[in-house]
Every structure is written in structure tokens, then in C-alpha cells.
Image 1 (tube, rainbow, N blue to C red):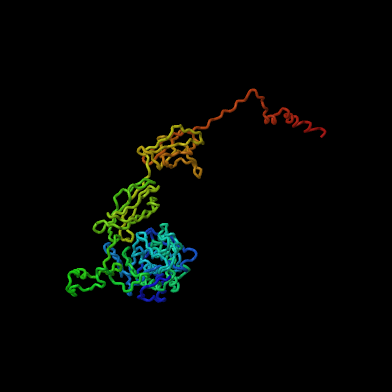
Image 2 (tube, rainbow, N blue to C red):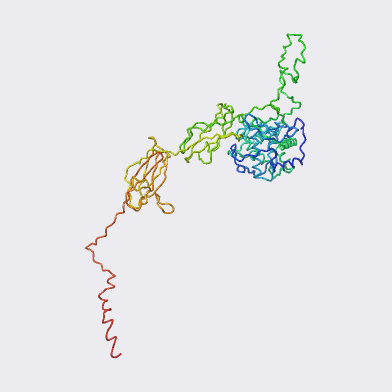
Length: 629
């Protein structure tokens, strides 16, 4: 059901030619006054193009509406367009305000819109989605996440929920999520900064900040989902017809379309950042028509329209009945009318939020040291102070680990954001060392304050140590050449206590007085090239023990030593003996056995064959020279 307005719009819809041209220009230039979106892991979000930016299968955004035609804010931008802002002041005592309040967008919310534009430009460049369109919808749907009331990761401080869609003035949508998102098990409600209903979020929800969750209350997730929803069906938002269809797919109301287009055009002419939580809040909503709404709150004890002139200029008549006429209170009529807190005047001073008041982050003095695989005994911490050195509470502080370490915060995180307490202290959660022993630097920064120097905290991961290594058992280790030794068990201790996880180096040496690797002694087997391995690195188990297995005797008999050393001074020497294989003596003939005739001499020197080679047979005088021949 289309939402109903209670008042006429102050401006007509922007002409199709102007809007289409604006979209095309913004798609090419990102619009005037745009702040480049972050390209690092700011706010825990993933790099552009690396997050969840895949359109769901099956449509959506082309039938029904994203919000279930929930109510929305109908405030319109000022008639005078904002000027393109100049350079924002950087002094922490000065709020970042460089233009009309209506043109201000909270810093984190603006970053989410711009990141969504960049991510969708990478995945669907033909859509030509400008971030100013997301800003226009965000303004109309939630007043830019309730004026930017989000934490450092972009999640709303309190859930933003629309009214129950029970058919009374809006669409009738029965519960589709068992209350998982909106807490309502009877009807659905629109959710978060971009006001998705649960059934639409179930299809289009995104994880744009890489935290493993698709959260409709997170402005990064919601902005990217909204952008993809608007681009559904191959729309090109540089074409007026597609732009109108996209906005109407969000809420099927022509007046909604006009309101969004007005804000879209307004932001396209210039926008600037304001601190989170200080954005201008809208007042008029489509389900709360307020014609003739007074400019100031009216209370029963004060006149509906207080006179701007002092009461002495218009004295009250003298009372005639003291018993029935209450005494006058001249102090109240002389009070000037107070400003509507929901619509602060542009010139009204804005309280500087903690993020801007902080002038320095002081690194904590705790010694950050741990052994591999253990939790640091001390926590990384900083103190947020202002220019006078006083602590500042409520400051979001981000702690970032470098890529050179495998130490991690809980859940394997390399980045965490915490808030400073009443003492100005922001303390990171427990840090656990990895297996890499080295020093590294933790950087602490204030999100949104890139000009504020980071605080650096040094941390060191040391190897586990043992000051004593002892062999368990004393059986002599002897093996013939090429044979295998029995396993060797060694126990490690530090200050008398078992030392688990200690790295122990085992080397085969030629003697107890040498620590050089032997060239001929036993080995731990062979490498891929067939060369003996005589040095090996081992680690003690949870009970502080290790087993040296697979020792093989070499080919040279002799005495050798297995030398074991550990960080911390622990040493053990185990004697190894290599023996030559036993030799077998030749067998003695048995005198009772019959002598055997060697066949070779028999065939070559047999007496019976000798006549065949006699001189007379070989050269007979008769055969060689017979008279009759």
C-alpha cells in the first residue's frame, strides 16, 4: 500500500533531463565535494571488490518493494542548494561543519555509501549507481541512520525499526523471520538504516564489511544491499526511466519518488561530512501528518504562542479576585522561545563529540611480552586525552596488528575497535601469541581522524625455554652399521617445572666435547636427495617430553653423541655406539665325507684323454712322409 502524505511537497519533482544528466555526471566524477571512499580495512570492512557483492539469483527489486511501503520521512531539502564545501578544519576542538546542516552526512554513513558505490561499480559498472542516490534514500528512510548514531564498525547504536506492517495505514505483511531480525513474531517491520523488510533482506542482504554477518542494522551491509537492489534487472540509473523504476521498487509511491529525487539532486550539488551522531534529524513522516505543526514544543503550563516581546510591554490587568486568580509568573513569559531540538538551527553550536575532542593517544606503559602459543599477560591499551591533557571518554579506538606477526586478538582478528572508558583508557582484548617469535608494533588510531598520529605499542613474542633436558631411562644405545636404534625419550624443564612446547635441536656429533655435526655417524634417515640427515628440530609435547625416533647407525663403527639443546640453556648428551657386523669364519670340511672329484681338472687333464695329444699321434713319420705317397 502506498504511503500517504499529510502535507504538500514544497518542490516539484526534478525534471527527467536534469536528473539523468546528474546521474551520468556523478557516475563519472563521484559528484562534487565527494570524499574518496576508504581503500583499506577501515572499520573492519574488506577491500573494495573483495566483499560480498554478488546479486542473488531470481530477481527482486522488480516486484513488491524493499521496504514493504513502510512510512518514511517527508522533510525536503532547503530551496537554496549547498555550496561545495572547502577544506574542513582539522583542529580537534572545532566540529567538522563546512556547509548547511541539511547537506551534512555523518562520516561513517557517508563512507558506507561511497564504498557501496565503488563496490558496485566494480561488479556492475553498467548500473552507474551514484552514492548520492543512496544518500537520498538513506535520508528519507532513516535520517542517515538517525543522524549517524553508529559505532566505529557502522552498526547502529540502537536498532532502527519501522512500525509493525499490520495493514493499518501500511501494507499487511505477516511475520517471515520468526522475529529474528525485528523481534516481532506477528508482523514484519522495516529494518536498519535502509529499512529493508526481513523477507527482502533474506534475499538481498550483504556482508560488505567482511565480519561474517549480513546485518541490516550495519550501514555498510545495508548500503551495499540497497545499491544492488536498485541495480537489479540490468537497470542503468543514468537513464531516467530506470532511475524512477529503481526508486519506486524501494517504495511504491510517486511522492516518495519525488522526495528521494529532491535529496538526490541536493546532495549532488554538494555535501560534507559531519561527526557521527550529529547529523540533522528529520521531523515529518508520511504516517504522521502534521499540518500547522508549531515551531516550538507546547506544554500545558505555557501559552501555545508565546509573545516574542517582554511581558512588561503588555502588562496583565490587575487581578480583582486574589482568591481565584493565581499569582503571575513574569519569569516564564520573558523567556525567549527555545529551538526545536529535533531541527537545530544551522548556526546553533554543535557539541564537539569525543572523536573530535581527542588530541592525542598516549600509549600504555605495560610490557607486552609472551612466549609462543600463549596469551599476553598484559593488554595493549592507550589513553585518549584532549589538548589540555584531560582524559576523553567515549572515543572509538582501533587496534591493528601488522601482517608480520601471527599473533591474534580473539576469534583470530587482526583488528579490533574499543571505546575509551571514563578514565580515557581504551584497552584491547587479550592478545594471543602465535608460533612466530619476533617483535612487532601494534598501532592504535581513531577512526575518522586520519590526521591524528597513531599510538604505537611494542610487543614481543619469545620462544619457549627450558633450562634442563634429561633423558628418560639409561639403556645403552648400540646398533650395528645400518641398523636402527631404540627410541630416545627426553624431558624438558624450566625452573623445575615441565616445559611444554619447547623447540629442541638434535645434532649427531663425533664426541661429547664437540657440537659440530658428524660426517660419518648415525642419522635421522635420508633427505630427498639421498643424503643422511644428522640435524633435526623437535618440540616437546604438552607434558614437556619429546621422543627421538628413527635413529639409524651409519656405516662407520665407533662412538658418537646425540646432542640435544634448547633455548634457555637446557642440554642433554646421549651416547651412541655403532658396531661392525660380526664376521662368519669359513666352514671346516667333515672328515667322514667322501672326497669329491673336481669336474674341471677331470675334463682337462684326464689320463684317458692324454694319448690323443701324444707326439706320435700328432706327428707320425708314416703319416707325414710315406714312400708310397
